[in-house]
Length: 253
Length: 253
Picture 1 (cartoon, rainbow over the protein chains, first blue to last red):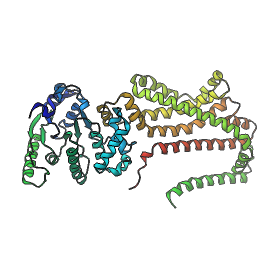
Picture 2: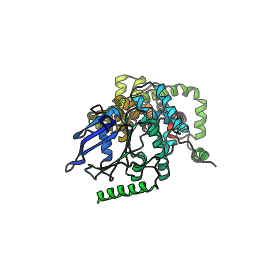
Picture 3: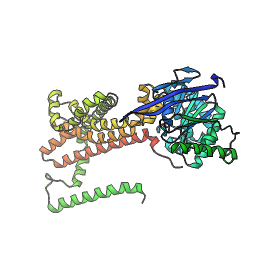
Picture 4: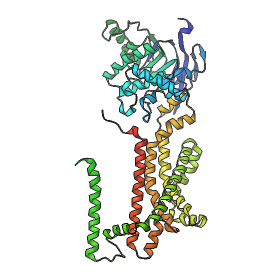
């Protein structure tokens, strides 16, 4: 792939936080690239710094070392990243629709157009009933859908999703995985997903980045190169899942 | 009986039995009316003297409403300053707490010396009494925005003003309304204290005058009027709260 087929490139990212013993290293020279329009997933043992990685990419923390390039350029990265934090961040006093347009509202885009676009997306992605509901009237799965639409509606290049399905029950989770794939295919954004669910990573992504325990570095990159739609029971899938799990467990011991 | 009905009937029954006991005691023990009139006499006085009570009620209501508005404005400004400027918090916080140790009875005569017998000393006493719960709850409310939501706003490039008006302020409303409900109740006390110290009109003034004349039934009628004003004010704040915080009520289904 040529340089420009990657929308995002991280080069040697190191992040540390002040702690009692001086500084705690969280990321130790992480390098990877995200293909334009592709789905990249980052897995790693829990607490290895996956969230820190996303926050550094979103511009919420400054890396000690390393560079982040968007479209080959350094700088202005945060305006290219749409960050979906791990915990539920819908504003409880806004209806689903008004939550979805938060990004364009903060960017001072015209309101009517944003609402119209959001309404269309709600209809297209099975949220028509939720339009006027407040978050506490929605199920966990619906809330996450609204949050994903909100992330998309920032109209930024790259969606950074931090375990968007982490808090859901297995059934809702499975149906949302399919839903996320639909959204990604139809809207054509580049996605960087963080998850601890190996199956989810293999099911959804073009590339899987495997991080080591803290301080995290990139251990390996896996190209699932499985045909879509993927099946959890296909022999190839089962084999890759097995390998990936072994890799992560080996890393943890 | 439904829970809703019980909530009306229970306090009504309790109140009715207390009044019945009072009424009986007064009659059986032949307590003279200038020491303790029976409730029936107080109610009769309230209605017979309503024409005389009404102008005093209006004066007290005006003081209470202005005092509550002034206290709320001061409370909100102070709460915002405390949340945004650490130095102000360190400087002002001990003073605010200390101010609550000073009995309002000590300040009210000074205010009357400085500002005369008019409306303003009472408004200020009322504001002084009810601003405290508003500051305390306002600070808690403004700080209740979660770290994740604040980061979301940062990643969306929100300005400080946007973060205040679209996140902190609406998020503070549930706590603020708790403060307002306490403030509304206290404001009636504040206005009465102000009038007690020095006034020519108002329910507090009327109580003092009637007390001196041994018209204990009028004192109680004024207390009844005060209680009704307080209840009405509390009710109004609650209705506004319900309207503003509609999103807190989950609808079934």
